[in-house]
Image (cartoon, rainbow, N blue to C red; front, side, top):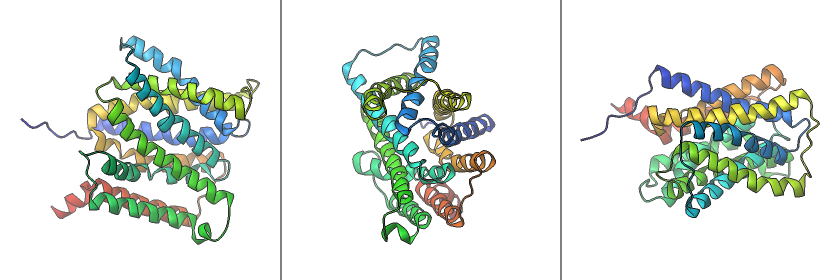
Length: 302
């Protein structure tokens, strides 16, 4: 007996928009915190303060904490690939480019994820559609970066490459999670992941930035705690709720909804303005997502 396809009902759409808002807000909160806190330390704050939030949720749901060393190895890999590396690259990138632009470049994650999964996972073959979507995503990035990206060194271009590196890290994280953490409770996976991330980042921050300063302004603390509570803790709860209700394919729509929130917050509160080529690049990336997803063109053919 076949399972019915998962659909986006009104509740799923509300949760998806809320998820896009809190994830889009992460770029804004990071931009605010960067005024006082270095990028690596922001990453540590983001994962460290998320631990008690998710721990309370896991305890309330009576989800058992695994004792299998292989599962904790899985958490360690996810902590590095899905949190420590991409968060640090994105936050450093935001020291050179606007938060809205960073969110647009991060939107290539879905296309890269499809290609990486196609290469590494036997049950997700690499198709012409996935390759076409990834190529369009790269074209969109090329339009954003412009021809000067290959004509000389520019810190802004290096920052954009850092965001792309974060997207690629997210792509490998999805494969790692499929292989190492299949069948584990999702919220426990999230708690294990942020715990491992904090263990990874603590010595790195101590060596590179020194002990984290606690004498920060209320605005900075608000941004850091919002990163943890909203853009990480609440985001994971929404993420897994949408995954169960509407499925992974519908969940990936959040990729296209994040940049508008990040761009709007940057424009309203940080005075950021996107160049025309950024909007053109975003449009091309959106088409690449549609090609990769396949459902829009499938409906047009029917």
